Length: 116
Image (cartoon, rainbow, N blue to C red; front, top):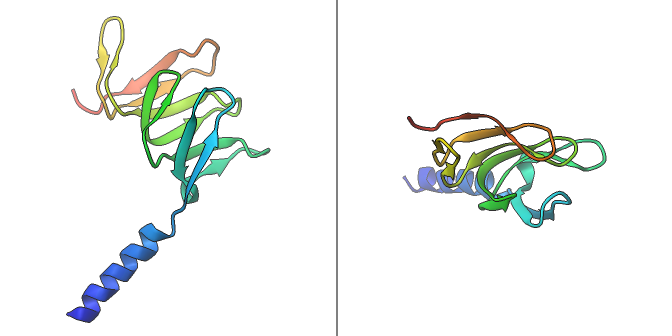
């Protein structure tokens, strides 16, 4: 029994303990993001493409959790909402996936509700 428990604990430590957290500043936003380094992908030139956030990040007024994706120009492409987003005629619930258009100013493109 002790061997099984030890094996389970060792596996958990290996899986979760090998993830270092990295924090970077984003040139397009006044703020930083912290993410699990082993989840990140980059465009050429070390521009972040996607990563799994280790903590809630607020970018351009959006509170983001979990996975976040960026366009090559550094604008947010896709994120999961940490809290509801109130729009003019509706509310996007928390934990929904939001897709933004690659335009300036930033505009909501589509979204997927977490719950209806």
